[in-house]
Length: 256
Ligand SMILES: Nc1ncnc2c1ncn2[C@@H]1O[C@H](COP(=O)(O)OP(=O)(O)OP(=O)(O)O)[C@@H](O)[C@H]1O
Ligand SMILES: [Mg+2]
Image (cartoon, rainbow, N blue to C red; front, side, top):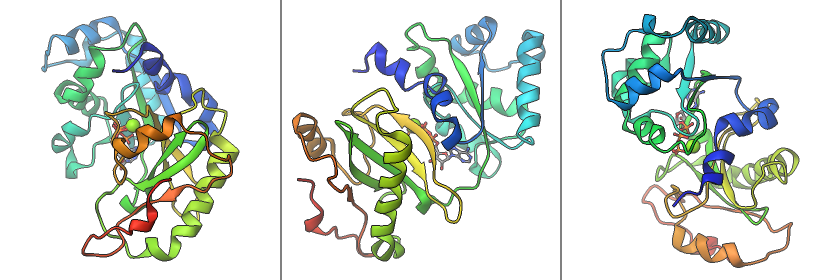
């Protein structure tokens, strides 16, 4: 069960200012009351002209500033279940109608809307970037120590992980130590990073660490006991990935 504090801390409207310099350019726009009403009653034929002018102007300005190439989320989630309504399944946003289409058809957005716990419901328009699936990692932080790293494209075999694993760990540890550690207001959480050379790593998102979180290569069963365990601060994280194209994992990579 998510606590109210979880909703607050993991909302992009809470963390974006702190991590702006290491994340994608984002415009956060509060939804007007009448749009929230239409979304919560499941109304699908929504006309953008019905909304207050300042909201429409904010949206247009944000889209223009992002060169009409954006990705949209609410405070917490992307409407990934509305992917099939987008051109090429990309969820790319090029105009206001795209945003309304994804928001009205996504069950994920509906669910977030029904559990805002009093936080203003927002849309976050982010700069669009082409992300290689092998470049996305979910990092697991337990009691302020980066303990686990998993590819988000799981379970897919990527041959280069074996050779580049140590470098990936080194880069993510450095990124965590310099930019995230003790800056995010929680002790245990997950954060998603994109590592694509020669660009600098950037944070895509933060999320709670609980039984509902997708931990990809890890299981909640093995992570949960670590929450009550203290380990040296400099303990290296485990990078777990598919080690061969027949999908066998190295038993030596168990978390201690
Ligand atoms: N700015 C962007 N440009 C292009 N693609 C993006 C962008 N942001 C995210 N994506 C793609 O969309 C996917 C889902 O985005 P994101 O992780 O932000 O969603 P989420 O709802 O927070 O997911 P989860 O529930 O797993 O935390 C990412 O894995 C990434 O591949
Ligand atoms: Mg997320």
